[in-house]
Structures are given as structure tokens and as C-alpha cells.
Length: 367
Picture 1 (cartoon, rainbow, N blue to C red):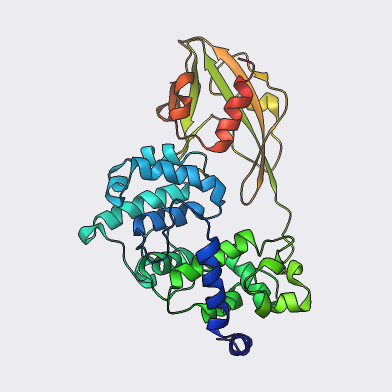
Picture 2: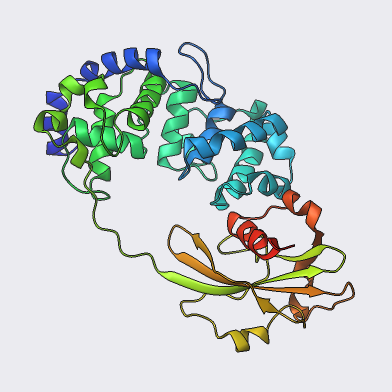
């Protein structure tokens, strides 16, 4: 523990935060489909599933996906028995698809353990696919009552304000984790973690925090200094780079759409896509690109551009469309095994990433 963290800990005892915050949580906690009332043992499967889904995704977006997953696969053994394609199909639209593959792999590892039981400790949980320090701590504390301190974005914000930490993120992350651990009580650590999450989501919000309504306002150093809405400070992010590409939407006369499975590695690995050029730093030369189209056809350019924001870059796609005969032959024979014609009525059943659904909707909006 750093000298700064030790000094702050000495000024703010665990019970100063835990007692009022847990009392607030018992009254005000959010009702979520994966959450259990105080005193009720949590299902580790549901805790794990929710935490994986919540990585880089909002609660509002996750709820319908979570409910569909547990309705279809109510146990980790049931999920493990599913195929990867089935998991990706149900995950489609939630984004960050590596999570879905790791989820499925992890389910199979857990299902192979005695009684298909999840490990209970942070160290053991960290050995599972797709589980990092935050997720391991969250599962250990919420599902098993272990003394662990998960720190997500909401908790970072609460802790930075409680201790008036002015070091900008991401540099402050290590310090905030240490400080958060000093607050976690031995009793009800899982409820405390969820209370901190709820406090950040509903009261100690990024903008205009409701300090007067906060159960911790009497011990919050940022509130006392009048800088709560300025914290946490953040280092300036570099501008997100832009990549460009051209997507080819081929509509066969029988109503089928040409799709292709992406390579086994890389972004959106093994997902279903609309055939497109590589996504490059420079705008493609349209006449040259048309020579590499998947079919020899009368391609015409759809007005407008598809824009999709990935974590590390902004994607801008031009969409070309063609209506082709049923007996049309593909031009890129080397990739023929990765291509498939899907009836329009079945497109909803495909594991299509959000960006591909945007392309299809844009290209077919006049049909």
C-alpha cells in the first residue's frame, strides 16, 4: 500500500462507509434479473454470466440479453452443451464478441469440474477463460461472500470522490483499487460491492452528482472541497483513427442474401458478415475495388455512408448493392467455402454483428 493510500485509509475507517452505504443499499438497491436480495445465496452462474455481459456494456443493454440466455441455458452445463454458433447467434448485437467465445469456453471448463461448480476464490477464478481481476473479484465477493474488492468505472468514480483523488485516470487506477480495498467490510462484501456500483450508477453520477442525496456525503472529501463534479480527472484521449471499406450486398432473385464467415482470428473472428474489402486507413478507389467484388454484377452505390464506432477506431463503409440471378457464380473461389446464401426471412437468426445489420438494413431499405 502506498503512503498516500495508507494516510487516506487512516482518515476514513471501513465502518464509516460500509454502515451507511449498506443501509442505503437495503432501501434503494436496483432490482436486476441477476441480483439476489440480502441474505439470499446468489447463483454463481448468473453472477458470472451478468459480469461477463456487463464488461464495457450498460445495464440497460445487457438485461434483455441476460434474460434470453438464462431462459435458453439456465445452467452452466446447459450453456456448455451449446455450440459456439448458437452462443454467437444469441449474443449478436451485444458486441465485443471475444467475450462470447470466452464465455462458451469458460462454461465448458466449469462444466467439466466436479459438480460443475465455479471456483470460489479470486486466484482460482482468474485461471478461467475470459475472467480478469475485476470479474474475479466481483464473482468471489457477490457469489461466494469472499473478502474481495471489484473496481469498475462506477466504483472508481465513487472512490476518487470519497478520497478526493486528483491523479487523472488511467494513472490513478492502481491507487483507486487500493483505496477501495480499504473500505470493503468483512461482512457482506458482495452487497457492499453492489452498493458501490449502484451508488455510482444512480447518485454519484459522472455529471451533476446528487451529493445531497448521497449516504456518504458526510465523509466525502470531494464534496467538502466542492470538486465532486470535477472528479475523476482523466488524461486526454488521442483522437480515434478512421478506417474505410466497401461492403457488397448481393441480393439474389430468389430473395437470398450473400453472407460470408470471417476468418478465425482478428476482429469479429468467425462471425457472419456482408462481404467487404479490408478496412484500411485510406479511402478505397472504387473502380479498382469493383474488380474484386464477390460477383460479376451491375453494382450500384447506395447513397450515404455506414458509420460504426469500435473501441479503437471509427469505421466508415460505402455500400454497394446488386440484384443477381439465382445461378450467379462467385468470383473469389478461394473463399467460396466461407460464403453462404441466406434467405432474407432468416437473417434475424444469423450471428450478425451490429455493423453488419446496419449494412443490410441500409442496403435493403428500398426493397
